[in-house]
Image (tube, rainbow, N blue to C red; front, side):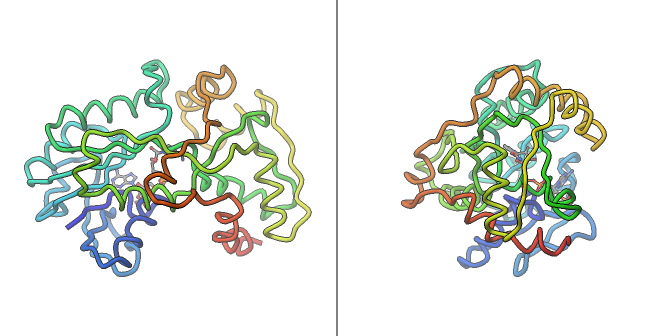
Length: 278
Ligand SMILES: NC(=O)c1ccc[n+]([C@@H]2O[C@H](COP(=O)([O-])OP(=O)(O)OC[C@H]3O[C@@H](n4cnc5c(N)ncnc54)[C@H](OP(=O)(O)O)[C@@H]3O)[C@@H](O)[C@H]2O)c1
């Protein structure tokens, strides 16, 4: 049995669906009342309360684990107690910067440390920024044809969560990947204006991009509920330039035997989400 955490989210949802389709036994961790992806067995648990995962971990051989929860060592302890044989941790390309003063890097670094210290066989996935971050534009796209976004000059080799899930499914329970960290990216660096152009083509709309100034970006992020420590973290990465997330890596192709999906493919797969809002 494989336990997928974050099963209602972008990566965990893709992974659960993929494992169901391939006929592998999969259990989806959900919070109370949430529906798992079709065909998956659901188990209720809260990642901020490790003991709540005991029923979900019963009989589990491998776990796909999200980072950044209150007690990562406690979560790993519950995995060990249940006899789990492999943990695949979703981390970030930012983790290797070692910057403990950056709130996002910090929770990734601490999560990786907890996995390494757990004594369990592990594999760490370090993806670039997700193409699904584009859903942040849904409300603007429902309101009109102008997309305003932060950090207009920062290119990111964005990856489709579909590919992160495909890599996770590939490495889960494969001892060849024990003790390895895989840095993953999409196929090309994209500026926000590039994503707007592709979305316009796919949706058949005359979309236009406007970059936010740093002051406007900070205001919008804080008004949107992003905690100040995370706003600071994004400014450190993208305004101070501590993170280069534009680098294209060969890993997805090497691990899957095919190139990573393009942003056009992502946009076509999710076009309904933007059209339904109008
Ligand atoms: N976005 C990026 O560019 C990026 C880049 C690198 C790494 N990451 C990391 O990747 C992770 C996963 O991203 P994603 O886009 O797949 O996430 P997502 O779509 O935001 O989904 C988060 C998932 O975690 C679940 N969850 C949240 N708190 C929980 C809790 N206390 N107990 C149990 N489940 C809980 C949510 O369940 P509910 O449905 O109940 O809320 C949901 O299934 C992120 O959290 C981030 O740390 C993101």
